Image (tube, rainbow, N blue to C red):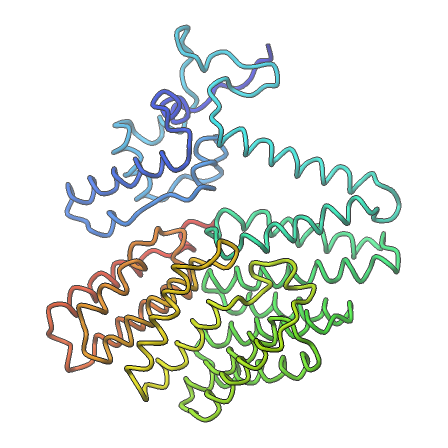
Length: 452
């Protein structure tokens, strides 16, 4: 047996109650938040949840800072014990199963989720070790491992809350940069490393955007573009321009969004991957915000032409955030129509088609953020048609999202529904008042609150 430091009381109690699986713990955490909100009359607290990464930190005792005050209150409601005691080492007891450790130094009460986390941590440590000792130059095994990590994160980015990915993504970019900065790269390897560094930087651009930090997002997107330039990779250059268009669109700068989409379209000439479709859709949305119906419709038609001529490229092969599937195209096109506000019935029909497409999407095409955007577009179209009950129904799945999924784009989309319901003709309608109140509450805590 190997002696180890005693676990925290929180870990002991979680194990004793068999809450080691994240989904189980989150269920009880959210129930406690609801009970606390009802007892204290604080509706804001009822929406609190806990991310998987935060749960793992609490359970593993990996705390550098005290939880937020509201989190402390919920934890104390769950266990009936002051949070300082919960996070302190538990007092040993001869009849507790956690007092004995197993030969590998892990606690005997480890659940499946905890074992998986330790295995993943060990794998990342092994990668860092092998990349250090493989030789004076980056070896093929290291490159393959780095490429696998890019592929893994790219594939799951649209489907998992950012807090569960951000640490791995930062480490991925840092590893890529370190290889390039240390000069341990053969000329034949440099292009591949620049491509991977460019994709990692692009995903961090999206992450910064999701956290509501457009300045950092643009810095990362520019770095992605520079990496693409060094790799002489036209599709990656075009994709980086697409990121710049996306960031400026959500930052309320549609002229810049249209300009970056045009720059990307110039870059992608002669290429037939889904980035060409994305850039045309980005242009359609930007022109629609500017009220240029002709340009918006021309860009939407260009997107259809690009879809018809589609030949997936090496970026599409990564899937996830690196590709632009058909449901996402429907979502963008519907959003452009809602922005134009010319034919509300047609906009509602397009928005409903996007919602249905995400409902029926293949697992590799589904994205929680884009599905939420499709629902808010449908809600806005229904508001424009005076269908307040239908709008409330459309936005309901968005307002039910946990905190770790409330990224900047989703909250902004919900606020657009709020603004639509604030028009004078709806201002005093009970249905509008109720949904506006829920959106206000929904918007108070975002993903950024659970990312440290």
